[in-house]
Length: 437
Image (cartoon, rainbow, N blue to C red):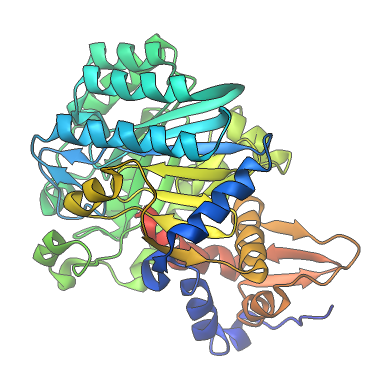
C-alpha cells in the first residue's frame, strides 16, 4: 500500500481541513445520534459472548459546590446526593445484569467536576455495589479524580482503604492571574500538602492536570505554572487544551474571547510544555502525558503496551468501557454511547433499571479500526502493520498522511514532528466528550 509522503510546507495548505473534519467525524459530541435499545442489547450480547474480554468501568460523580468559568463537565451544583447515588447504584446493577455472569474489571475510573465533594458514606456505598457486582483483576487500576481544594486527610485515607490506587488531582493552572480569570483558586502549598499526604497513605500514583488555552494565560505564565507543578514532583502531568463552548456549557459565555490565547500562542505553550517536562526529566508518553521515567506508564510506553480511552491512558490492553452516571461515556463493541447530560433525563433513563435510547455512534468496521489505529498512534506515536496488509481504514489514514500529520514508511505509520505539534490541538480537548475518538 502506498499512501504517499509530502513535506510540511506542502501539506500545511493541502488536506489539513479534511483531516480536521475526518477526526471530528469520530467525535461523539458532534456526530451523536439516537441509538436504539435493540442495538445496545446486541452490543451487550457481544460482550457476554466473550467472558474473558477485558472490561473497565467509568463512574460519574458530577457534584460541584461552584463551577469555575472554564469547567467543561456535566455537573450538578448543590445538594442532591441521595437521589443521585440511588440512581447511580441502580444503573451499575442494571449494567452488570445485562452482562450476565459476574465480569472482571481491569480498571475503575471515578470522575466529575468535584467528584470527591460528596460524602465518604455515599462513596463507600457506590464502591460496595461495584465490588459486589464485579470482580477486580489482580492488577486492576482504580483511579479517582480529586479536587484538591475539597479533600482532607481523612478522605484520602478512606479512598486508599477502598482500594483506590491512583489520584488524579484537578489543577488546571497555578498562576494567580489565570486562577482569578477562571474563578478557581488553589495555592501551591495546598497542592503540596495533598500530594505529601497521598504519598504517606501509599497511593501508587499521584498526577496532576495542566490546561493550556485558558483566559489570561500567556507562554510565560504557562511556563511558571509548569515549574510550580514540577517542583511538587507529581508522578505525571497530563496536559489538555481548553476550547470555549458556551453552547454546551452556558457559564463559559462569561469568558471574553479577547482574553483567550490564539492558536499560535497555544502551539507555543505546547512547545514550552515539551521543553519544560523534558528538562525536568519526565518521559513523554502519548501526545500530552509526561511521566516519571520509573512510572508504570513509562514502562508500558517503552514496551508498546499503552492504551487509551475517553478517560485517559492505561497500562493494560484496550478494554470495553461501561459508563455509569451523568454524561458518562460507554465504549461497547461497535458502539460509543453517552448518558444524558441533564440530571432529569438521566434519572428518567435509570428509573426502572432498563436500557433506554441513548445518543451515540454506531461504528462500522472501518471506523472501529481507524479509532483503534489513531489511539495507537496517540499512545505510541507509531503503528506497525502486519505483512503489508492493507487496512480497512486506508483512505482515512491517507488523509492524515497527505496532511503531514502522519508518515508511512515500510509498513509502519508514525506521527510526524508537525503532527506532534498540531494533533494535540485537534484531539486533546479537556472534556472527555470531545476526545472520545
